[in-house]
Image: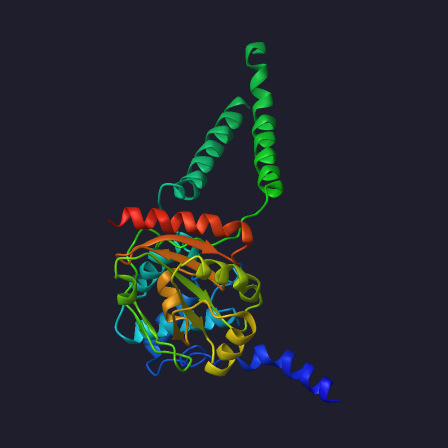
Length: 130
Length: 181
C-alpha cells in the first residue's frame, strides 16, 4: 500500500510542480476596448507549442503566458502592432498568422492577381474565337 | 494552326509541376523547430529572483563578465530535461559555467529535481510566467543558449542535449570566447 501511495505521489509530482497560470492568461482586461484589441491580436498569434492553433484557442501553458504578455502590454498602452513586432523580433514571422509582405511572402499576394489576369486573357481569347 | 499544337499541353505541364511541388512538400521530413531570432543579439535586460535556497537568482549582468556561459531553459516537470541532465553534468565537469532559468516551477520541485538528476547550475532564476523565455525567443523546454562574455547570444540549442551534442556546444563556447575579445 505504501509503495502504491509512493508511486501515485511520483506520478503526481510533475503536476504539483506546476505554478498556477499567469494572472492575465484567463482573465479579461477591465477596459473592454483594450480587451477587444488584445483579443483580436491573440487570434492572429501562433501558439509555439501547439503550432496549428492561435494563442486565443490554445490551452497550452505557454499560450496562457503569451496571452498574459499580450494583455499586459496592451494595458500598458502599447499598440497591437508593436506587440506583434516585439514577438516577430524574437520568433520570426512564424509567430504571426498574418505574415508581412517580404522577401519570401510576396508571391502570396501577387500570385492571385497574376492568375486572375491570366484567366481573363484565356477567357477573352476563347470567346473571341467563337 | 498546327504550329501552336504544343500550347495545348501547357496547362497539363503546369498541373504536373504543381503536383510535383506538393508531393515534394509532403514527403520532405517536416522540421517544426522554432528557431529564435535573437541569436547574434544581446540578451534582453532581466532580473529573476532565486527559486531554491542557497542558490542566487539570475540577471543579464551575470552574463557580461567576460567569460562565455550556458543558459539552460528547463523545468522540473519536463521529461527531456531529465534526459539531458547527464550531459549538463559532463559539461560542468569540463569546467563550463552553466546558469538556468526555471519555467513555471516551484522551489521544492526544483530541489527534488536537482537531488535526483544532479545540479550543474551556478544560478537559477525563477520565471513563473515565461517572461524571460518569451523575451529569448525560446519556444519550449529544454533549450540551451550559448552566451558570450559580453552578453551576446551566440547559439541556440533546441531540445535536450544528447551526448553527441556536447562537442558542438563546447566548440560554440570556444568560438564565443575568441569572438568576444
